[in-house]
Image 1 (cartoon, rainbow, N blue to C red):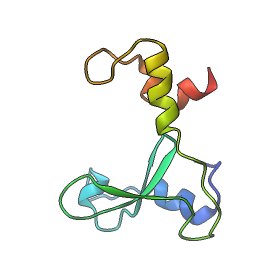
Image 2: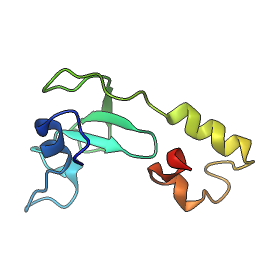
Image 3: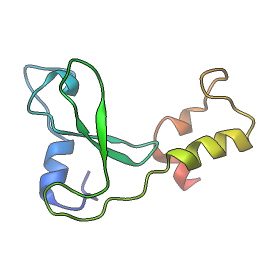
Image 4: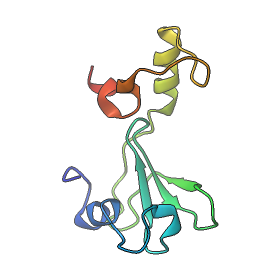
Length: 100
């Protein structure tokens, strides 16, 4: 994750806890990045997998990239693929679809 806005964001996105395999279980895990949507969020430690989307880095204040969630769904729709009903191609499970 060397292409992050600052060292702190890169550090927190690559944080690995020796006690918790899942970052949602670790109180020290603070941020999550969803590659397929290009979304950043603060982890809500309430026992679930919720995040609060953020538009600016909590450490350096840089504007983060715009979410590509709508574009993701639009591209699948354009291809006639219904998420949740049809099999979604592997390149749509990460950010590869953005570079195709």
